[in-house]
Length: 306
Image (cartoon, rainbow, N blue to C red; front, side, top):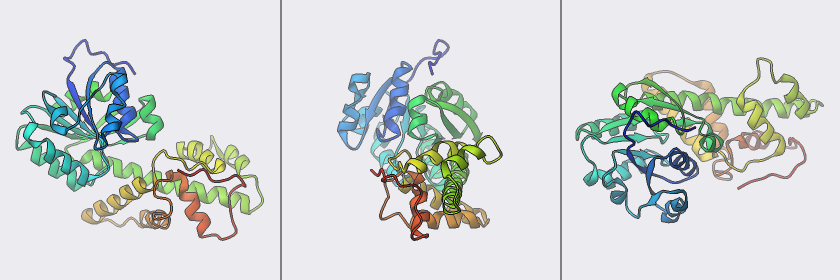
C-alpha cells in the first residue's frame, strides 16, 4: 500500500528486530518511502536490507539517534525489555515507541509506564496475518494507547496493514490474545475435521471444498486446511510462537478471573509437539493430533518441515 505523506512530516524510523515478520514489515515501510534504520541482534539480517534502502545499524543506540519513531518486532517481552534497556540513553522526549511484538498484557503496561515517565509515547500494536500478510502489507494491527499517539503512528502503520485503536495501553495485546485464542483453537478443529473425514472414508480434500462457503468457512480452513492436506509445515507462524501466545492468554485469563477450558486443551495440544517441532508452522496442530491417533495419518505426502 502506498502511503500519502503529503500531510505529514515523515519520521525517521528505527526498526528493531529483522526476523521472520520484521523483515517484510521493514520492507513495506521502505517501499512506502519511509526512512528506516534497521537493527537486529544478528547484524547480517539488518545488513541484508541495505540494498532495499535501509540504513543498517550495528548498535541499538545508532538506530535510535535522531529517530522520531521506534518500532520493535521481537520474540517476547524479555527481548523487548532488553532492547528498551539498551535504547534508554538514546531516547529523546517526544519519541514514539511502537511495540509490535506479541507479549503479555502486563508487560505492555509496564513498558508504557516506563516510557511515559521520560515523556516518550508508547503503543502496543501486535499484528495478525503471518508472513504472507506482512509481505502483502495486509496485517491486522491491534493498537493500544493514547489517541494522539495512534494518530501519529497511523500513516506509518498503514504501510504494513490496517490498524485499529482498540483501547488504552495494553489493550492491543488483549486483542492479539483474543485473536490467537481463536486462531489456535480453529487450527486444531480443522485438523480434527480433516482427519475424521479421511478416517471415516471420505476424501478430506473434497470435504474441505464442500464445506467452504458455509458457516464453517474461515481463513484457517482456506489456508491452513490446504497446508495440512499438503503436509506443508514450513512456517509461517511457528509452533513456539503460537504456544507463547496461548500461554499468555492463560496468564491474562487468570488475572482477569475467567476460565478458558478450550484454550487450555489447545495449549496442551501444542505443548505435545513443542520439543519435536518448535519451528514448524502452527498448522502442525495436525501432527499433534496424529500423535494421539496412532495409525491415522492425513494423506500420503511426505512432511515438509523446517
